[in-house]
Amino acid sequence: MEPVAQVRSFNRTVTERVGALMDSYLDLGRPLGANRVLWEVGAVTDVRELRARLDLDSGYLSRLLRTLEAEGLVTVRAGADDRRRRTITLTAAGRAERARLDERSDDLARSLLEPLNERGRTQLVEAMRTVERLLTSGIVELAAEDPAGDGARACLQRYFAEIDERFEAGFSEDVALPFDSGVFVVARLRGEPIGCGALKTADPPEIKRMWVAPEARGLGVGRRILAELERHAVLEGATAIRLETNRALTEAQALYRSSGYVEVEAFNAEPYADYWFTKTLTPGTATNPSLP
Image 1: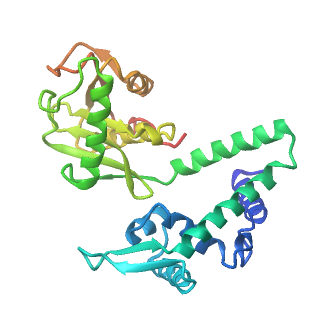
Image 2: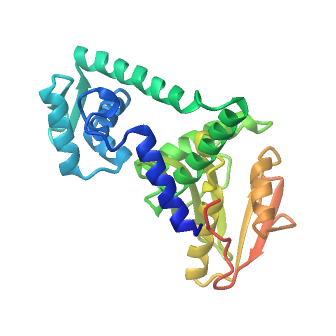
Image 3: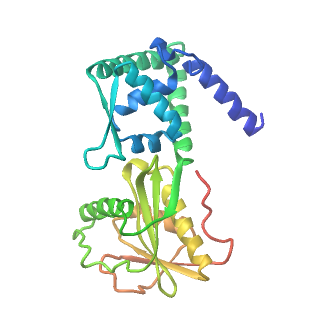
């Protein structure tokens, strides 16, 4: 089958098999959308965060929340510090209903696996894992953001903490060469920052602060960030780009080498660097940002 036709066939099979078309999803008296919101409220209590996580229209989400409020499952209140922000809380009945939703969801999952033999179950689970990874890759969004903004600071805090553990001598931001000007790119998944990278203004420009959250690794985010930084460098007229990395970051070394970077002699005095790389850039030759 043609790829588009196969995707459409897959979508029809999944929606039918999981009961997404039913008015009463899992026989709980409400459609899939309302049940999904109820489940997410267990982890997300801010309406804006919930809307970003589920990528829902604000009007539609409001209608779903009113439905859950009318059932006595959630309460929605204006924030204490900012009345423009609304918070959601599960009621006692809501917590019980969410537990029932979990039980029914587990039963549905088992019903998908039970007709299959052990080999079939393994194949299905592995295929689902691959599909989930590829679909998740497609909803990661990259954008240049303020390096002093919340998203950038959240990434850098986790990045510095990780390399402090991984580097043989630890890490201190005060000792490392700074990122003082240029473009700072943040990757977000369902609104949450999960990766970053910076293009430092220099001649040629330098890539700094490349990092992807552990929970987002394997989605191709690092390669996409690298490609986006290269794109910015090309737009600024650069014909080459440079970066350095530490010996402990073996996955970063593999990414750079597979993306066309060539190891060179040290070009700066970065105390945490063990390897220095450069790459020639021409329009259209930046790293392919396609998803895996």
